[in-house]
Amino acid sequence: MSAPPPTPVTAPATTGGADVPERTLGQLVADASRDLSAIVRSEVALAKAEVKAEVKTAGLGAAMFGAAALFGLLALVMLLIAAAFGLVALGLAGWAAFLVVAVVLLVLAGLLALVGKSRLSKVTGPERTVRTTKETIATLKAAGPHST
Image (tube, rainbow, N blue to C red; front, side, top):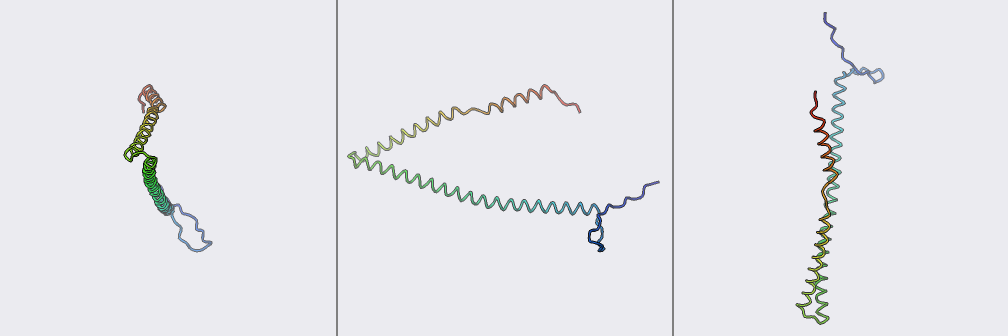
């Protein structure tokens, strides 16, 4: 003899006595799933809108930094030319004044390159990560394959 067919689980009506058809558990789960999906979609849309606004602001800020760097570079060139003309005003020949400024710039560039090289030579690899990775590999090899 077979068991009677299962009766659907229903949610109690909450409308204070009005005749509202009771919904099955499947319908409630489907509604909850649909609502959750709608919430996730709206949260993703909100995140996209916020990120878009932030990226626009960051891009504008980066462009302003780029323009500031360009104007700073142009100002530096003008100051170097002014320094050379200042040496000319002190009685140095024009070619010699510009040569002095160029030599000073080359010496400064050489010093910066040497300092940068010494700083880069101090950079080491991720020693702790390499050590712990080797320890992990050794531990896994020692443990052997898992039997399931």
